[in-house]
Image 1: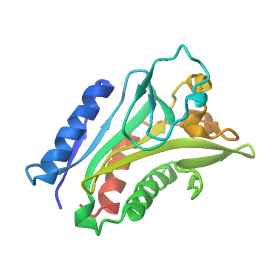
Image 2: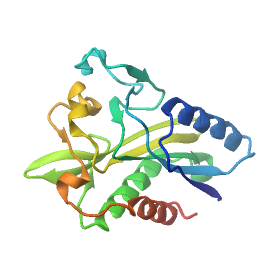
Image 3: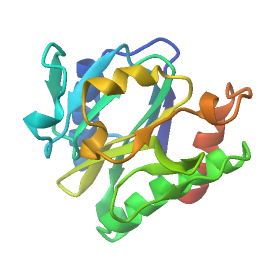
Amino acid sequence: MKIDIKKSIKPVNYKEAIAFLEKRLNNVYRNKENELFWILEHKEIYTAGSSYNKNELLNKNIKLVKTNRGGKITYHGPGQIVCYMVIDLKKRNKNIRKFINLIEKTIIESLSEYKIHSFGDPKNIGIWIKDKNEVKKIAAIGIRVSKWIAYHGFSINIDVDIKKYKHFVPCGIIDRGITNLEKIKKQNYTNLKNVIIKNFINNFKI
């Protein structure tokens, strides 16, 4: 199975990125293009997934962009790696749970290479870190499946401004916080994108 690997250097407009994913989805469905794994950054934007609740937006002055991915409200902006994908689950036994597990495995293994222990939670989707006896989210996962093709993806906080998350209830979870890698361990994360790509390729057997 051939998966195209795409890396964008400049920030990509959110709506343009989603339009690109949806076009690729239709072409993958028609066997006209390869599957996709795309790493990028967005300029500041707040998005709401299909299961969000209006009460979870604490600052009503925030412009919220509704999107068709799963999940609640989240933030994208500088200092955050966003990884999008278009993956044909028909070629993978239509196993959504295994697909999510492979995403989690990719993130956990990538952070492990930086000596950072992270973990998944069956009750709360995403990847978590224990920080001074508190469990905090380091990576968010939001997926949509259409025609048995999965798209959208995940994001990892590198040195994103944590204050931005005070405007809403992150992912609808009240009793857990948000953090970034720089707060956990100060080191050079420049190569993290390449580490993620390497582990994604290994886990998805490209």
